[in-house]
Amino acid sequence: MIDVAGHACECYDPPGAAPGVAMIYLHGVRERRLRESTGLRDAIETAGLRAIAPRAGRSWWLDRIIPEFDHRITPERFVVEDVVAEVERRFGVKPPQIGLLGTSMGGQGALRLSYRHPAVFPVAAAIAPAIDFHTALRDIHKIPDGDLFANLYPIFGDVERARQDTAILHVHPLNWPRHQWFASDPEDWQWHDGAQRLHGKLVALGIPHTAVLDVRAGGHGPAFYDSIAPDAVRFILDALEAESRRLA
Image (cartoon, rainbow, N blue to C red; front, side, top):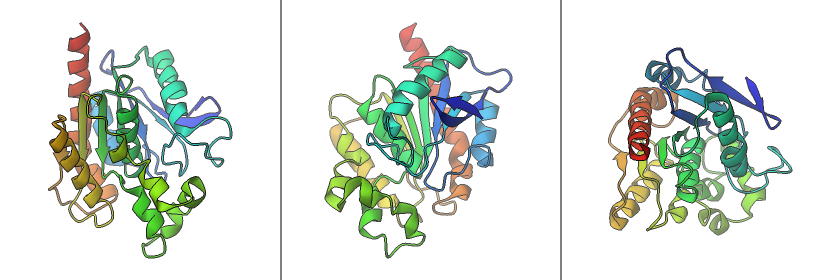
C-alpha cells in the first residue's frame, strides 16, 4: 500500500513492466482489493502493466463530496488530479498513456470518468459495469444486499437526480474516449440492461467501442471478472500502445 494525498492505494510495478504506459484500477462497491482479484492481478502482472488502485469506499467515483471518503475533494477529482499525478511521479507516465479499468461500481466509474475527461483518459475498460446505479436507489428494498447502495440516498436525494449523473448521460456525441471496452454477462440481472443501453447509444452515435455482451460466466461477481480480465487488460495494453504510436 502507498499513501496518495492521505488515501491508501495499492501499487503494482511488475518486473519487466512495459515502458511508457500505466493503468488505474477502480474497485467495486464491495471494495475488494486488486490483490484479492486473482484473475485481474494475474492478467496485469502477465501483461507487465504498472497499476495504481486507489481506495475510495462506496463513493461511486463521483464528482461530489462524499464525507465517508473525504470532506475536501471529490473521488473524481482525487483520481483525475492526485492519482494521475502519482502515476506520473512514480512511473514517469502521464496522460494520455494512462488507462482506466474498473469492475462493477468501478466499471461505471471508469466509463464515466473517461466520458467526462476523454483527453485525460482516452483508454477505458469496464467489467460488469453498474451503469444504471439509479435503479439500485429505486429498488434498494427489493435487491439482495441493498444496504450496499444505501449511501446513494444522501448523495442524490432522488432517483432522477441520480440518473442524470450516470455514465450514459455523460456521453458526448463529439468528444469521447478513443478506446473504450466493456463486458457484461447476460445473466447479470441487475446491471446487464445498462450495458446494453450504453452499447445501443454508442452505436446510434457512431462512436467506436467494443462491447462484449454475450459471455456467460457466473453473472455478476469475481467469477465473471476473472474470466474476462485477460481480455480487458489486453485491450488496455493494445490501446495504450496505439496511443503511443499516435503521439510518436
